[in-house]
Length: 224
Image (tube, rainbow, N blue to C red):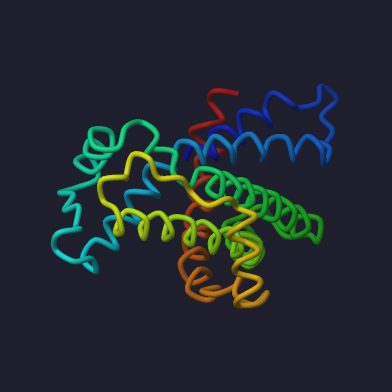
C-alpha cells in the first residue's frame, strides 16, 4: 500500500497543466520514489517473515520462538538493536524498486495499449493488463529475490555459528553474493523459483490492480 500511495502522490504532483501524459523520466521518478519507500517500510516485515518461516527447521536451542510479528519486532529491537531492522536493506530496496517499476510501468503500458486498441476501460482490461504485468514483474524481480534470500540466509548461518554475535552481524555485499551465485551455479540460478513466484504474484497483482482501479475511480476521485 505504501508503494501505491507514493506512486499516485508523485504522479499527481508531476501532472502537466496541459493534460499531456507524463514523460518516461517522470514515470521512472515516481516508481523509484515509491519503490524506495516501500522497501524501507517493508524491510522489518521481510526479516520477520524469513525468520519465522525458518524457525522450525532450526535446532531447539537456536530457535527464536517469536509468538507473532509484534513479539518478533520487540525481540529484534531488544536483543539486536535498531540495526536489526535494516538487515539486508540494500537487496530489499533493489527488489522493491524493480518490483514497483516492473509492475506499475508495465501495467500502465499494457493498459494504455489495450485502450488504444479500442477496448473499454473495464475490469477485463484491468485483469488482462495486470496478468501480463505479472509476467514482466516476476522475470525482472527474480534475480533480486534470489539475492535477497541468499543475503538473509547468510545472516542466518552467521547467527547459528555464533548466536551471541547477532547484533554485530554484517550482511555480505551484493556484489559478493551475486558473483558467488554466478560463479558456482551459473546465470540460471538467478531465476530459481520463477514459477512459484509467478503463481504467487499474478493473482495478487490481478486482485490488487482491479481493486485499485475501482477505488481510484470512486473513493480517491473525491480528493482530486
